[in-house]
Length: 150
Image (tube, helix red, strand yellow):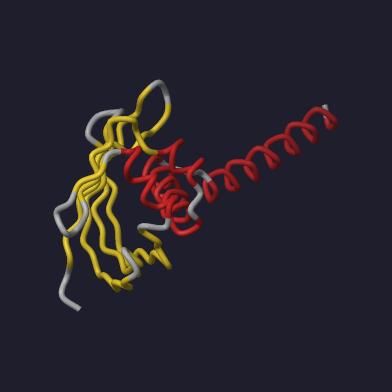
């Protein structure tokens, strides 16, 4: 009986330790979207078109802070060619909201510096970003940003 009790106690202690570990390391849906956003922003700076192609939806509508729009192909092409070069992207705040199990809307503020057509443009932006879950994978379908006063 002592052996069974000792084994059961050991099992309970191990289970408790695992639950505490998972509680502190569990990733919620908002964290998953934030990680996806970070991967995308890092890919823009690194000109990693493979990651961008993976995250951006084929029907993406990307509205820049100057009002110009790109689709997925033209946006990736501008970064790949160097027409638009992101020097850094720094998120200062963001909020992730879910509307049903398949729609995530991110609103936030960021600082960036973009070299476009040979000119460096430091920007502070407020943005809205929309992700849809398609075939089990989150895809970015829309982006719109507006400039904030420096």
